[in-house]
Image (cartoon, rainbow, N blue to C red):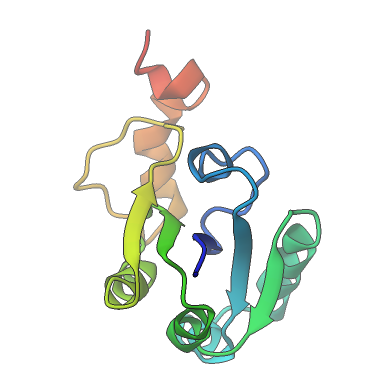
Length: 142
């Protein structure tokens, strides 16, 4: 019988991510090191090193290959995935829905910003985010 699986992506690399509490105890967590995916996003060597060093601090198995193919080979019964608005990751998540039941786990709120915010430049993001960034849970429970 297949088991559930946590798929971590680069937008969710921390021990305190809610996904570790949402999935059943003992669920295997994996990160797929997908060279083609990283090339598509033009990640720098510094960013790749940061991702790798962060992964070394997490309770996660690092696997290499095409993300969808690797997860398909693992045949999970259920897939727990951290939610993200990043379009590239969202496309992968949509493909994974054909492999297993996918449950997106939302992250804790860091800031409250309008959905129409332009994320191409950090300054535009920070101008929208700085008002609530220092508040607990982005000021939602204030």
